[in-house]
Structure formats: C-alpha cells, structure tokens
Image (cartoon, rainbow, N blue to C red; front, side, top):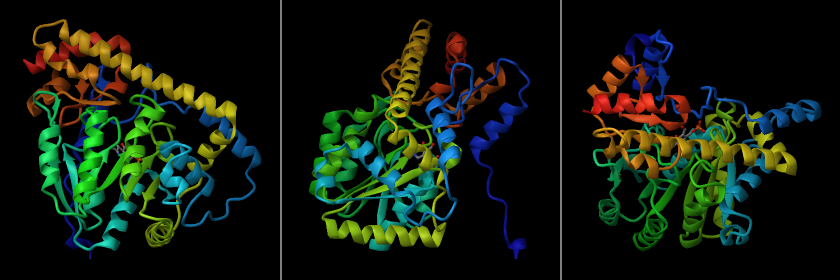
Length: 397
Ligand SMILES: Cc1ncc(COP(=O)(O)O)c(C=O)c1O
C-alpha cells in the first residue's frame, strides 16, 4: 500500500535547522527555531522544574493510567492561572478544563470538539499566523479561512481591516486569536481593541478560540491572561488552548490544556464528556510527567515563587533584547524602519524582508531566520546584538 504514497513537501523550518547544522562558522546564529534560549544559547530546564522532578522521583508511588481527562489537579491549577481565582464564569460552573498533550493537542482537540457541534463549521485564523495552526485545525476537517491582522512591510497591526472582515462572518464562526505574544509577529491587540473584539464577537455570535502559548512572556502572567478573562466574562462561549511548553520550559514533556467556557454548568459537563471521548479515541490519555511537575510546583509556595521569578527573568531578558536590537538597528542607515521590534512582545518579530534577504542573512552573515523572516529574539545572545543589526541592515538594503 505504501507505493501509493508520495513524500510530503519538506518542512521549511526543518530546512533551516539542517542548513544551520551544516554551517561550520563558529559565530552562526539560530533565530529560526521557536524555543527560549538563555544568554549562552541553551534552552535550560528551569530550576523549579528540576526541584519538582526530584520531589516526584522521591514520592511517586505508581505509573498507573491517569484517565482521558488527565491530571485533574493540573487542570484546576491551569484554570486558575488562566482565568484568575474569582472569575465569574468559574464561579458559575461554566468552565471545564482537560489536560492535553501540549498546546498542539489542545488546539486539535478544540477543533475536533467544534466539528462535533457543527459539521462544516468555519474557522478563521489571523493573517499571518503560526505555521502549525492551519495543519492542526484544518486537519480536523474544519473549513479554514483567514482575517487580515498585520502588515509585515510596515510592521503595523491592521485592527480596522480585521474588524471589517470579522463583521462579515456568519454567526458561529470560530475566530482563532493569540492571547499574547502573537506568533509570528509579536504584535498584540491593545486593551481597547480586545474590548472591541469581545463586543463584535457578542454582536455577531462569533466564538473565540484563544491560543495561549506564551503566558508570562509578554507583559507578565496576569496581564497576558487578561484577554482570556475578558472574553470569558463577556461571551457565552470561549475555547482556550493552553501550552506549558514555554512558560514552564516543558516542551518535550507535552503538557497543555483545553479550557471550554460554556453558556451554563450543564453544558460544561456535556462538553467535558465529549473532550474525554475525543481524547480517548485519538491518544487515549495524555502523558503525566509534565502535568505532575506543574502540580508539584503549584503545591509548594517556595517552588511556585521560584518558578515565577525564573519566568519573569526570561520575560525581562526578551524585553531588554528587543530594546537593544531596535536601538542598534535605529543607530544605522535604514535601520529605523525596524523600530517596531521595541514595542512588540514575546519571542518573535517578523522582519518583513523578502525571501532573498532571508537567504542572504544565512548565506552571508550566518544568521538563520524562519523563511517568512520571523526571528526568535530569545535566541539572540546580548553580545551579538550589534552584529545582527549590521547583518539585517546589510540585507534589507
Ligand atoms: C502560537 C503557538 N500555539 C501553540 C503552540 C503549541 O506548543 P506545544 O504543543 O509545544 O505546547 C506553539 C508552540 O510553538 C505556538 O507558538
């Protein structure tokens, strides 16, 4: 049967990874891969995670199955981290949360849940959006389209065009939004734009599917979750896909959650039954180790404080690098047009330069960006800021 298959087209990002590995220049710089890196270029295990793992090793008594809903203490913690302790939707029993294998698992499960409610339901994603949104969500069989969000050439958001496009959508359309640290642009809606979006979704009967993969890495844990809290307060139905890959550094442990905010408590219970059934038929149940680490951190005030401090240090490192890079670019001819880097949030910015300039960045300057000109600011050692600015100015012309 396999003779019927043709190889899939190579993943563009994997091509960058291979080209980076093959580059023998000792000063090569990987800004393509989307993981946090420290000043030495490492993606470290957080100290709070290490301590939690030691605790688990000493106290874990079984490796028995956890069930399709995953780790329930983890789900409760994530729900509170995202929505806050006193959220009215939680108080009304309108929220249900299921542990998933990473944020990707949460997005896919959310898409499958939507498909169960309405066959042929339409989903719209921002243009541009994270490269995996279309395969993950479209792969579930939903009808996918996009709305204008960001103009890469000028480095500006397009809130009016976004609003116009959303106004035209039929009721029931699922609108995928990034809660913070938009991937790949780093450009987020401001508080008024979020309020307008909440009002628009309410008026038009649109349902947000909020991707929350970077809580704590933009403005801080509370402010990054604020858009989710607002939408869950103002709208009857919201879906949230949470990832613990970046803010706990648990990438390979595959831990995340899908949160469903429903119109009432009875619907929350029904939705949970469907989420569990969907998980069961796809992967049965999620791995526990990452969730158990998060629970161990949450349960120990000293560890929780340590985790928050480490996360805050990561956030500040990125914010500082943004300011330094924008300043270094602005100090040279033609670099001022990259001033948007300073005001954006999270790990990514789009340089907005053409593919041949991205290729020249790698070939001539040994700097590897994603093919769409996305750079991972967190991949930049401080000592390389000036050199990167020179390289960007050289290829951008
Ligand atoms: C926007 C966005 N959503 C979701 C994810 C999912 O991450 P994971 O499945 O590793 O938790 C990522 C990871 O890079 C992301 O950038």
